[in-house]
Length: 235
Image (tube, rainbow, N blue to C red; front, top):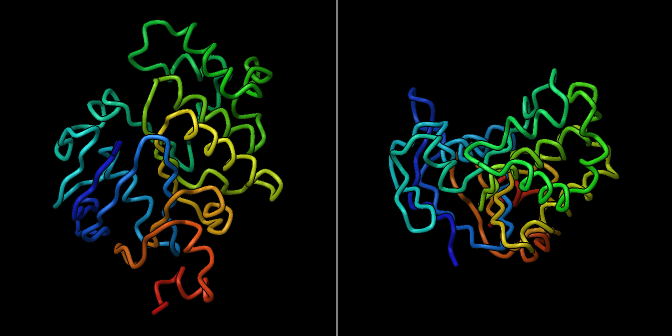
């Protein structure tokens, strides 16, 4: 079942398009990786899906409903959750307070917290700690828990392994793979391209705001000249 569908989406920040005519789908239970060089427009595309960048053309549909012109709150209520790369926790609050603050629109916060802690058990050991004192890996998993508090169906994840120790990169991506297995749709922007391709079902390569290659993640990962593919230069 298709959860997210983009058709010919153009987007930017009001001074010109950064994303040019992107088609993209994410199904229930699927991990889709968006890879490409820095400045390719990957984060802008995630923000456009979430309603935080201006969509100047094309259509954004979620669960069959056209949300192209709808505000971020409407998209969040529909079931989208954006995990930004930076400033993704309230640093002065405890982890417990971060979870409560993120349960937007959820009436049974205590029940939902229990569900999230079952999905991400390590967060339970951090509840009394201030988010600003956590390690990079701990902050990322808390940010993921915060997103899950609102009961989303689609996770838009921007660079979840940025700054993490190499041993933690695979662990974070495995967590996202596990959430997809539980029925979440996951769209991930990731600079650790090979690690992402090992966990993704499908992938798109974005260069200069345009999709230059897409297909099964395993096939893209086996490209003989992966570096050229990454920068959109492969034939």
